[in-house]
Length: 108
Length: 215
Image (cartoon, rainbow over all chains, first blue to last red):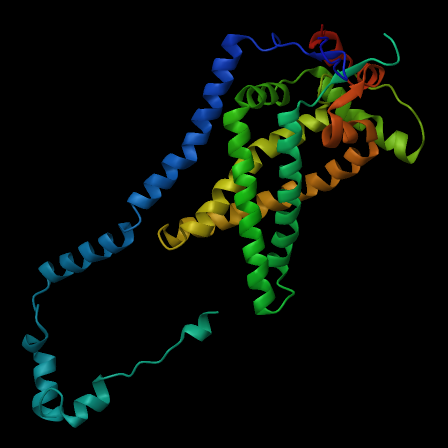
């Protein structure tokens, strides 16, 4: 049985790339492809960095504060004694409490 | 050499990879421009996003399949596009003789090139590096925007945008020259072979150094 003739007469030489070149270039390609994967992993691992830093800052503020609880604040105590009466009074509700407004539409 | 001699320039796996890449990238380019310009209503824009994502997945699978199934071709392509000589600089000074040929119908002397001319090498570098960046940034923007820090997501979006524009501009030139060189166009999309004489004229160093007779 005769072999079917190929529609071309020449091909690229299989020896145009040496084994050393193949290993070096192939290694560089794989290493470069790994770089963004490593970066992405690092970004994911550190994704809560901002929250953790903010939490740490708040705790530090708390430790260094002389007045650490709102009901021990003389200004607040004076506000209730001389003006608002007591917490959750009608005056304090009106002046200190806020209401929820959906602003999601303003972002888009 | 006889007039009937042919060289297999693009093996089957390269042709299949290139065909899927061409279809998926053209789809991504068109839908990407629509997403950037936002000319449609919300429902149509959502459909465009879905088409963009599907085409992106197809392009990724195509690239991964070629990387794993034809790693030797990837290495060979990388070596070729990153191998430079003085001839490449000289090629750029006459831009391969194409402007003179197309606009002035004049033939100027062009330095001998390998399988890829200097312009194709530059395009190849952008396709390798830019294509990889586009795929990785696209996946990050699609699947992980809620996990990646905001600043990094923004940076990835900017990279995706600028690399896309660069590759789209390159693609316009690539499309024009691809169709202009009809033998190479047919070789890439149909049978893979080009006439020996044609290759000897356009890629003399490739024919001289990298080609061997079969049988």
